[in-house]
Image 1 (spheres, one colour):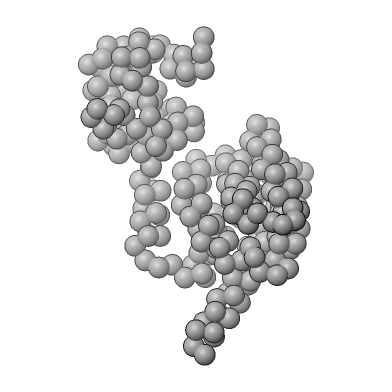
Image 2 (cartoon, one colour):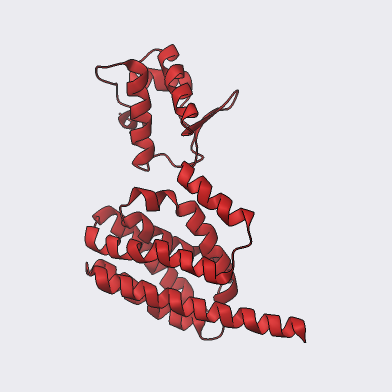
Length: 245
C-alpha cells in the first residue's frame, strides 16, 4: 500500500458527501496537505475513498463554498489558505507595516510558539527543529557567508518552531510569518556583530526547547526578537539620516 493509499482510506458509514468533506478537512488540518497542494484526480480519489464520483463532486463543492478548496476546471482541486491566514496576509499587503509593527507581530506569534514547542515535546517535530537549527548554525559559520541561504535557513528554523508548537492556528499563519521574518531579516542579518549575537540567541532558544523548558524558551525568543528589533530600528534611523543629509 502506498503512502497516498494510506492517506485516503475507504470511508465508513454516514452521508457520503459529508464524510468525504470531513476526511479531506482532517487531512488538511493535520498538515498532510498544505495550501496550494493539489488533491488526487477525481477518479483516483473516488476509488481510494470507495465513493462515487458524483458524491465526491458534491463534497468538493461544499468545501469550495466554505473556502477550503479551489476547484480549477481543467487543472484539479487545490487546498486554499484558511480565512485567518488570508486576513493576516491582506493586512500585511494592504498597508506598509512599520518595523515596530513587524517585530510586534513576531512577538505575538513566536513567543508562545517557542514555549509550546518546549512543553509539547513532539519527537518528530522536534527532530525537524534540530535539523533546521544544525543547518542554520553550520551556515552561519561559513566564510564567506552566503547571506541568501542563511536568511532562508534562519526563516526555516523559526517556522519549524512554530510547527513544533502544535497549535493549528499558529501553523496556519506560517505563510504570513514567513513574510514578516523575511521583511525583518533583510534589514538586520548583515549588520556587523548581529550574526554572532543571532547565533547565540538561536542556541539558547534551541537548547531551552529541547530541554522542555517553556519559560526559558519564551525568554530566549523574546531576547532574540528584541535584539533584532533594536538592530533594525538603528539601521533604519541611520538610513533616514543619510537620506535627509
